[in-house]
Amino acid sequence: ETVGQLLDRIAATHPDRPALVVRGQSVRRTYGQFHAEVERVAAALLALGLARGERIGIWAPNRAEWVVLQFAAPMAGLVLVNINPAYRLHELEFALNKVACRALVLPRRFKTSRYLEMLLELAPELALAAPGALASVRVPSLREVILLDDEPAPGTRRWSELAALASADALSRMREQAASLAFDDPANIQFTSGTTGAPKGATLTHHNIVNNGYFVGESMRLTEQDRLCIPVPFYHCFGMVLGNLACVTHGACMVIPGEGFDALTTLETVAAERCTGLHGVPTMFIAELDHPQFREFDLSSLRTGIMAGSPCPIEVMRRVVNEMHMSEVTIAYGMTETSPVSFQTVPEDPLERRVASVGRVHPHVEVKLVNEQGEIVPCGETGELCTRGYSVMLGYWEDPARTTEAVDPAGWMHTGDLAVIDDEGYCTIVGRLKDMIIRGGENVYPREIEEFLYTHPKVQEVQVFGVPDAKFGEQVCAWVHLREGATATEAEIQDFCRRHLAYYKVPHYVRFVTSFPMTVTGKVQKFLMREAMARELG
Ligand code: ATP
Ligand code: MG
Image 1: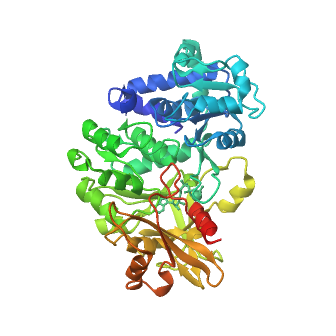
Image 2: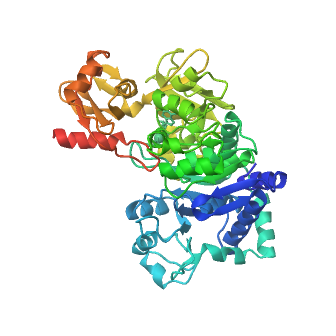
Image 3: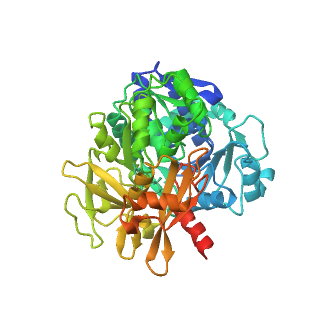
């Protein structure tokens, strides 16, 4: 099934069920209304002269138009390019040129960021061009700029003008084009989070993302009765696949609290919309649980949701189950390159399993763990996780060298993650190959030390990583964010570890911080922390 065929089918089955609620924009759409809007935008994009296979970028926070374009672009045979709302000029230029974007959709501004002004800096020709006739020196592929506000700007079109282009004729041409698409055509280019370095553009097909969304929704037992609160960004697979596509494949309602993540707005949305599910990365759940007004909200409608994106501390899981009523909360593991999910817990899994593992492998995905020599390791031993199946990307966009590095000739995706799988098939992510610390020949897994430090009553959040060391190769370093009002010394944290952990795991350096460098998906960028420590230590 293509993305367009999926929406046609669901909207025909449940035309009057709620599809989309966007609280910040006061938008409410049934599946029938949403489908009609998607079709109009798809027809308009073709009427603008965009051709099958061409790339259309969206550089915007979570808004209704994002969801509409997510379905309209692939329905029209275009490739949707998700552009991180946090990107600035340099990164935008890189992304647009990397995939030769023909069109770009953006709001005039988002919070304090002046998107249109930034774009004009990149493409000053826009100010003089007629809409659709941009000839930019720095982004030669770009022709069309579509603004998400009503205020007009030279050279651009407004999103609200698109509907008028969707004549009966344009609609029937679009439907013809939609019917000619293949399920393994590229539908979407997503950039990875950039946790370990520069983001990579993964090309995903209709088949990749529609099916992954479906299996994610199955693991959550979603039905058309569900209302899923999605505060995670759409530009990332967490929002668009685990959120939006999991809902649409099951006829459930997508509930969007606002443009960026805010703990209070998320809590308000869950309570006011009686949401049955809530997604988040661990830091988002921590922010919600620790919010001073947390107790004021009735969250009893919650049943499920996904915690993913990075290691999920056991304490946070327990609180999500006990204090947020999310008894069926599931943990998922995946990566952009595999559409993304390959492991997920199901509600039947006992809580201990759900807190200690990322569950079992998804249907139709094969998995193996290998050592440095590429040999399969025995059950219960640590190895690099490799996955194979329908969900593996087509490749990094026009980057065959990096694609062959990641996906071997037999089709195995080498994830770069270290994992252990027990004899019942439950998988535990031990950490990233790149984050593993080798101290004087001993392998140290930061996650183990982090889990332990979370049991310290003064610790709110902690990140452990390796820093270069002349004598030991690497030394263990911990950055600690203390709870409000708490104070502690380096020696106190080290003593705490020394009593329970082997000497080589005790952090040699402890630094107290109030925040960590993060991607907008809420992932801690340890490579930046390593760089900061390297500067400090000279
Ligand atoms: P980049 O590849 O650009 O460095 P990234 O790998 O963080 O960034 P994503 O594709 O967004 O980009 O994230 C996938 C990674 O996130 C996985 O490879 C894994 O390291 C981590 N991850 C995802 N889910 C989990 C989880 N449940 N537990 C532990 N780690 C997870
Ligand atoms: Mg990655």
